[in-house]
Image (tube, rainbow, N blue to C red; front, side, top):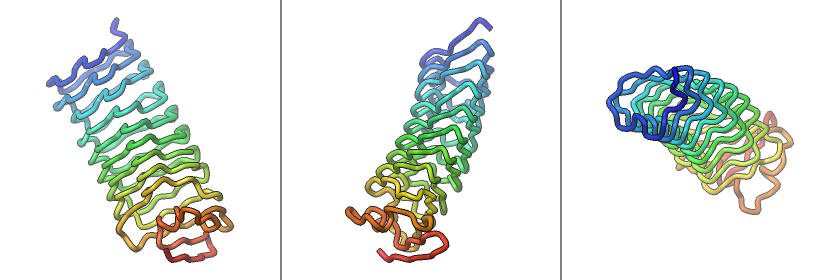
Length: 239
């Protein structure tokens, strides 16, 4: 138990099938378990306070529990983990950084705790089996292409706390037919944020909300959805 850190590239491209990380370890370096094709699960102890970029990228892990001692899902931590089916994100996490779950194509559902305030660029890019995502009322920003090509999403609810939605954030989510946005003032929306060839899309916003209808300067929201519903008022606008 004298080991306090797992260094960069420590087990990268190795054939290990399992590992027990001792409670003495406080950090896991970048690319530590990158391309561990036989590693299916890992238990990270509460002693670990930092996990580097790409730490488990392109490995074969199917599930992982992140300890409460971690405050962010680092850049590309689980990049390309196509066997990952579930993830337990603890309540101390404040940010999910860029490409954290990029192309985790078998990840089916994610619960994001109320501590998270931002979701980075391409965080869930290509998670094609993601059927549901629940955004907490702490989220203020969703990054560029954060959910690009998440084709299994059919409906999402964006919380009142949201301030900005990045370029192409939900681009290519071709089955996303319903978005409920609880923000009373329309958040800033990047180009192609909700682009899809679907003609059956709808956006529901609070009754008396501002910015969705009033500011057509760049027709941002008009381009996104063919139908807008203002809460219970059911006011429709055709694009």
